[in-house]
Length: 296
Image 1 (tube, rainbow, N blue to C red):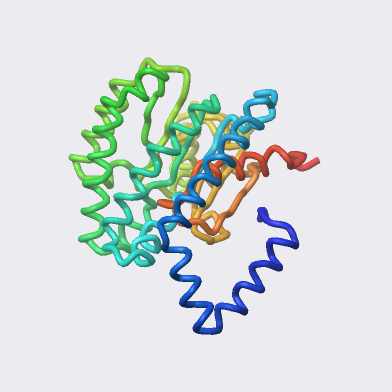
Image 2: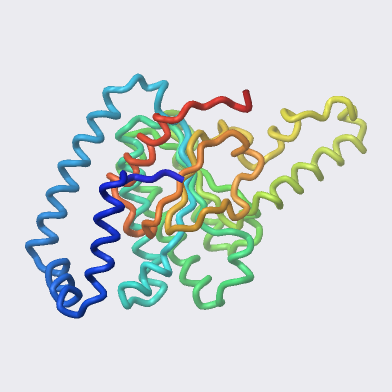
């Protein structure tokens, strides 16, 4: 969707790709990008750019910023493959990245963050070994959240949504602990979608409507958008303003299908474990630059 670079950047990219066809430039390029000097320079530049972007965002009226950011955290496995790692290491790196992203979101006083961690399809499409690794990471991550000073100092309420009955008991217990110790917090809300599917969520809402109508508690003419929204897993949350998807895929993948009817969508090629503070700021600045019309 968004293109971070202008024509000059694209021209430089094309020229670099052409030069890299030749062995001498390819060898030189590898040496440069893997050198300590290059990484030090990139790190310093990123820090400076990050500080400047943060300053620009902090200067805005808070009403201009998204109040609810949702993220499809894609690319853990591709990150692992690109770095000659096992997929489990990629998922672990993704878990650590989420902790960082939460800090950056809290720093901007954005009150709602929702992440897509595990789809209902993942439960059947991934190997049992990988799913067990993911379950262990969820337990670890939720237990860390339960005692994390960042969560308690900022008053972050934690909750999980999805068909949670599909998860093993150890994951459900970790969810319950995290939700219980943060239940009274009201400053921020962090929601993790587990065993989640947008279509399944709508199906469950329709079943609830049908049952209430059959029981005589709901008139057919009373069924409207609000009646459906109030029966969704996310009924206590505002609809997302900004949806970010990492790793280059430009689709929604059954995520919050009802809720994102008027959300702004932002796609980036960055794998989730490599998603930086600057990448977050770019996404938010792109959101701020758009004119939201809500169908008008």
